Length: 185
Ligand SMILES: Cc1cc2nc3c(=O)[nH]c(=O)nc-3n(C[C@H](O)[C@H](O)[C@H](O)COP(=O)(O)O)c2cc1C
Image (cartoon, rainbow, N blue to C red; front, side, top):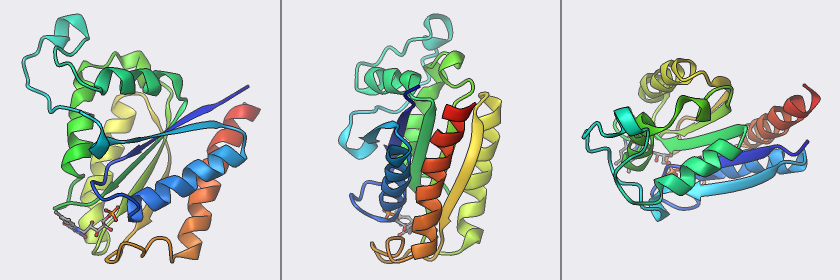
């Protein structure tokens, strides 16, 4: 069985801490034989929700942008890796716009998806806890399985996460285990 894994990078800064963790998870997933793909939100056109509520009936957003193609990737992938830095106790604007657009996405796209959350922050858990808690409410609400939460507190330089060998090992294992256990089930 081939498992598809989708990584979603939420930082506007390429190659920073959250994307480094994401890449290591994807590397682990690839080592377990998964097909991996990464979407960098800052390089895609994902418009904010306009609250027109048209999707309540049609389940389709009236906006024409890259979200439709991303939803297809979400549908194909059994494992999602969502990566974002903490910006003011919350996710980046790119990640928030992406999540708001889930409003239009049919529920079967979420159901049973295994999700790994990767979070970096300049400060300690006092900054990331609130955001992690938000995701931890959203995941079960949509029928998703929270598999691992990977955190890089104190990531003040662009390479902080890369220099944390324990975190990199944890990230690789998360990707590897998420795919391996799915294949075995
Ligand atoms: C606009 C902005 C807001 C931020 N807000 C916070 C914050 O509230 N708490 C915190 O701990 N770090 C904050 N940071 C620091 C980032 O979370 C930290 O540098 C993170 O490692 C960046 O991730 P990246 O390398 O993946 O872009 C902020 C950074 C920016 C640019």
